[in-house]
Image (tube, rainbow, N blue to C red):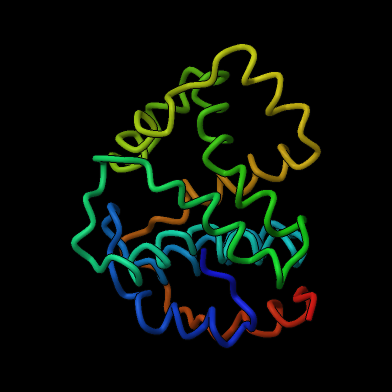
Length: 185
């Protein structure tokens, strides 16, 4: 399992693989920057801004390991778990827990909000099936009892809305100071 030991390693991963597309019509970097900007504009804490920025880092790890010839929609790569675990040495659970839970938040929202599923992007709706579909009643109770579930739902909303095809010009390094402030090392 990849373990990041520095912010420089994360920035390098985004430099190398951030311009790749991963089952959406925008690049990984564009999506990350849009999500982090939405979090920042909503007044989120620095930890949630970093979670929004890095929530899909597991996809980039997959790209680094397997290249861009991934078989999207054939299996669930568990990008949320891989991402959260890879960041655990550098960031607290205030960053990693919402990342680990953002797929569960999608499943919870699909189970509890009849209109939510219809709002998903094509790629997100397809991946939902691989990720277990809408939550059962028992899964919903477990999810809501997690102390970070509310933050995961916020992250999920930024994730869903951070997919503009023509986003404003944003720079990943703009968020470096926020990453440094939140980093444990």
